[in-house]
Length: 187
Image (tube, rainbow, N blue to C red; front, side, top):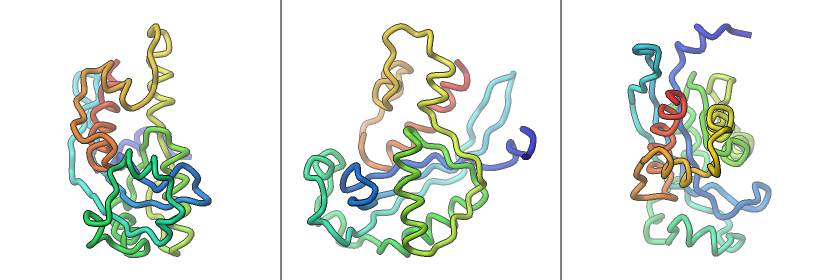
């Protein structure tokens, strides 16, 4: 297992997904947002330096299986997805952007479940570095003594004063996630 200093060399991939529902076996990815950043240590605190952003809409194959509540929450409409990529093309683009980066997500099991399934389904290789970080776990570890704190992306955003004007769009949530990671690590 690599030591901590070798992990510091890797870029961080802050990933958020939007899906047609909560069931990874029934529902589909329809959007991936990602902020790629490197972390630097300044005065003993982590500072994120954004390198690039990535966003892709994915055309669903089985929109009839979608949960209407999920579609309403993430703002899906056919018009905005008219030029969406197929899943294999989207995953190839995502794989290249996240190559050698460490996957970070809020509620990692959800996002990673859909991402892992898409890699398996398409045969596109996952080129990310193997560690994964869940910001819910980080927040709990660092802030568990904070009375009445909830750990949703929205609640932590409010706690840290982070604005997310386009919540439930993948790239906006990925940007918010990167900002929260930095604040959590500094707390």
